[in-house]
Image 1 (cartoon, helix red, strand yellow):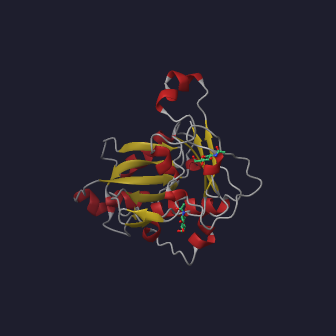
Image 2 (cartoon, rainbow, N blue to C red; image 1 turned 90 degrees about the vertical axis):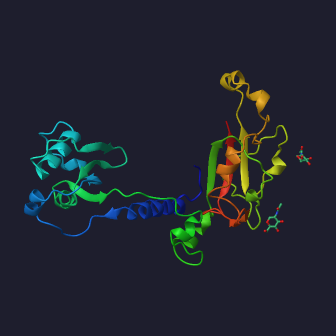
Image 3 (cartoon, protein in one colour; image 1 turned 30 degrees about the vertical axis):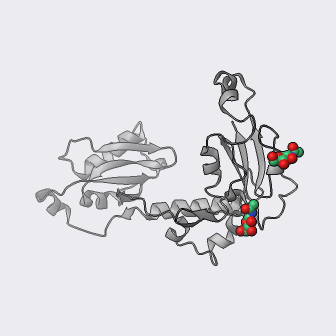
Length: 262
Ligand SMILES: *[C@@H]1O[C@H](CO)[C@@H](O)[C@H](O)[C@H]1NC(C)=O
Ligand SMILES: *[C@@H]1O[C@H](CO)[C@@H](O)[C@H](O)[C@H]1NC(C)=O
């Protein structure tokens, strides 16, 4: 993504991530004691455990061994393998089958940052701003300028510039530091770009594209013969346009679009 001021969208991305995390049910406060647990086994549930990986004691060769040991001490009588995922990319931790009581005790263990019960999530809405509680007159949404000042670059199947989603009504010309451009080609020329669609390029010169026969099935231009690129490019930056039930608009309707067809 190229942008003049990327901070607002970053804020929004972080906000969306937090909103996502907040949907996971945090474990309920205090419950039955360990003693009760031993006499009255509870059913297990899947829990996601976030850890501070730097707190791993050095005697454990791998995080997985550490986690296995921590889980084993919760209920020494249980020998089952209860960890079913170990996370080490965007966060550290693991997923395991635990009773509510074990989860509660685990949340106090050294090196454990948080423990969440896994929940089933359903598709809730096609109206994400309302679902997230974003208000178009107040708060983070208007504060980010609805994507104003941002160009979102897409590498996809091209773009259908006549789509009403790329109407540039109310947008000023793109800033002078923007180095993108609009390629001419089959049923496409630079006059089809506007203050919304600020770049459209086409890359099919490579031998792989030739071997795939791209020249037979595709417009020799940024124009989208497939539909995927047009759909994707009209999601976040979509100008408010009629849809099957009402008006559809992106979460960043003032963002600009640049398409790189490849
Ligand atoms: C773009 O949107 C404006 C405002 O809704 C509308 O008046 C105009 O006709 C649209 N342009 C095109 C090319 O559809
Ligand atoms: C670009 O395409 C439009 C629509 O087909 C056409 O009217 C226009 O003359 C073309 N412009 C150039 C410079 O080829």
